[in-house]
Image 1: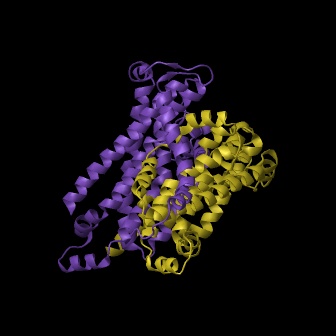
Image 2: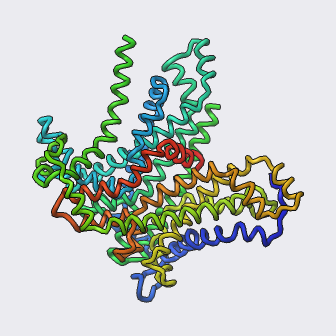
Image 3: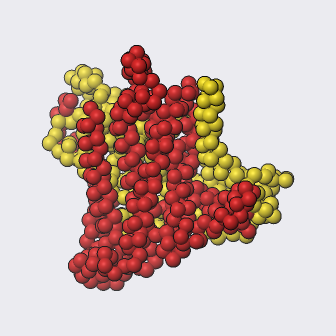
Length: 296
Length: 274
């Protein structure tokens, strides 16, 4: 309902401050970053234009790059895996409790905390037994001494320890999103279905599932795109170590730029990251549009 | 049988309460223990005698109040600017008759998919050149920029639903567009503005990476970065570290305790509308 015809000057007053700030601080840097990806540059001295050489190095010669991409994708997959569980819990919460949102908001508590707090907390939980780590303490008291590990310093398991922390932190977030979706389904539909003989599991399958698809999609997109961008949790917990064993795309970018001072190369990785995020957003939306069409 | 089933379900509900809250409670116990008790490593044990001096020492060794006031300042300024700027754009998009409304909206929406860290490096170079690196401004500006897309999206969605008749009659009565915006639109849009406030608050209050990259002076650090510095520098007394972590978590936990309903609603609304 575009009702107001206002002079161009007024429009400028309303739009320009925000738009200019936004373009200067988000779009201009991204474009600068695309361009810097084509340079050989240490951030200080003269930059040299080298075309796509950074990208060639990245795809062909960098032993850290592809493993970090693989870990990023695994991160995304892992964080999606908990969403069906969250949906199931949300359905149960709605069915068995009058006020499930209170319980859901308890599950939600870790979501509001900074990664610094969460990361440091879990670092202490993951500490070796000699430093009083809780996880190892639990294992020892269960008589599973052989299962104890240095969770963040053993290269083969460090990454999984980080996945677990992210799953833990965002469990309540996805549960609450799903719960809101489930409670928004009108009760009448279930009552009508009950008359037709559909209850419990059958009602879940034929009513809740199709109607929850849009909300389910939101969780999937958030989890997937969020993990593609996964960065601060890894930085806080391991910084990408030990020996690159927990490097994801973003930390590899950060370490290449700020530790190895290869600004051009870091920018090339950043370009790749932006491209991957855009690509997957499009793919996921396409996939869910198909799914929604099939159900409706 | 039915009772048994109910019991199983309740047990199922109890599991996440333990897994989600116990680590936080454990941290609280940890912060009140002596080094010996901590190294003992039992996963459940109350401190023998609460070591309150852990808190006193942590408070004296770190710059807690400085970090806290920096965080309040940076987050507060960001929130005010986000609300003001994005509600103006949202109003222009939802009401003005002009050619580029959809283009502007698309520009904002595209930005939502851009990961913040991809701008880290160029922003640092830009800020160095305009000489605002290591100031609060170097945090506030990108914080505002990255918070506006979702804010514009939420607010314009709401404003499109406001019946235009009130504005029309005010317009006919000779009220200026600024007056209409201030006296009609803003008061009506308080609920979605609360949502935007909550989303911005949680994101910016907790932000760590930009702060750690752009700020180097001790006196300018925000709380998450301050906590990180304290923990990484101060590794002798575990109890003190625990105490500082608890102090770092405390403000947001307190706010959540009183406003959990609004916060969860706001964050879910942000997710669903985004």
